[in-house]
Length: 590
Ligand SMILES: O=P(O)(O)OC[C@H]1O[C@H](OP(=O)(O)OP(=O)(O)O)[C@H](O)[C@@H]1O
Ligand SMILES: NC(=O)CC[C@H](N)C(=O)O
Image (cartoon, rainbow, N blue to C red):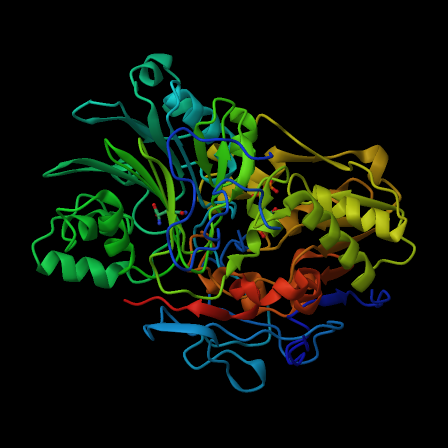
């Protein structure tokens, strides 16, 4: 794929160097119950095929004392970025253009910001508004027909803790019980379930669980999932990973028809749409299909009633969802395969985009009740979110990251480097790949404290600044007197990179070259990743050279977008890369 024009110094990738310039741098596992064959005409499972099969395949630059929220500036002409290209801009503000498929967001002439963008004056973006670190999404887990359902979910949530640290919860269903049992709260899984009695109280053989980091709605205990509602024919609970791009509009419609919302979460619209479904007297799966047929955006969702567990992935399959089987044969569902691993379940396959699985006493059925769409799996799952031990979208996350590092070494190598140092944790596999491909030795020149969780990295600039120092420490014996290549998975606000460069220089590095194993992030995510507003993304306002100057590195290089596409190969157009390209499969509807 051709790189966009380098209007603003190679936003799409490549490297920028400080003057003097450096060179460019289970087999089949039976489930309890009956039918295993998909029942939808368009089922990818294929008429007689077994259902259980192997898978197919914080820029928050610290503001100078008087600079908080000062006018945005950007690098002007003359930036010294190397190869790469610009990426289209996302439209200003939250667009309301309905659904598009593959439509690039409006771009100003020559790659400049579209109309409505803040003024620029040739400097570097400084934006001191609040915001957390990036790794925030949500994780879901579910199990059916398991005597220890709540405990299995608990382990699954532990394995998925990296996907959300704001709140956690588990809801269980016992056969013949009149209600669903729930326990949830704000905090980490270990905090919410710190009292084992809370877990023991959750009896039942079916359960769903959720780790939340909000993408819509407040960070309040009310919004912690799974959400539970009581319909006239029984209670229903929902756990959702993703973001519904038309939730605000649906909410207004529902409220005008009398729905009373109890949360500010987008997820609640699913419950109200189910309650008001034309199939409200019918079986759960029909209501779910009716409801989800009206929502747009990203959802990997688990819905539990007294009689069934329904798992659905949106037609574009933005967010992951896998099916596994416990040693007993009981089916388990999770955002990532690492949750199956911890619970002792075997990975069976992905839930397909647009697929609805219904787990009940009758067995497991598969259906594809929605209009088909091209898959748009989130490529950032491979770059940053998912755990390296997971298989996501049919690919090993670890292998992807190592390959990103190898490609980075090939496109933005550092001649005469002495040592490759990863920025823990997410930068480690890419640094290994960079080292292997370049022949420069890998060393753990930065160590991560295991006693600092993100709980302590609060959304205030002062605490965030100290947060990086609390979390990461240099190893002087590795760094001193060396030309260091520091490899990280991504730059969001630039906070971490700036601190890392300073830290390495203070530890005696003679040169520090930052290498980033993904393209510059230029757009916010509308599909369940809690990226900050694009105004806070350092690469939205700054070209590679201006970013390099801000973080203070001797050179800065990104994995180019076309390199990422080459890596994805024939699957490239089945991945969503909107945060790098501005190519949004669906735009939000207000
Ligand atoms: O540019 P910034 O706004 O600083 O954000 C980018 C940083 O955030 C992430 O690390 P995180 O702190 O989530 O830790 P991890 O690598 O251990 O997941 C990522 O790996 C970068 O290091
Ligand atoms: N990150 C997510 O998947 C969040 C789920 C849902 N949109 C919420 O905000 O609760």
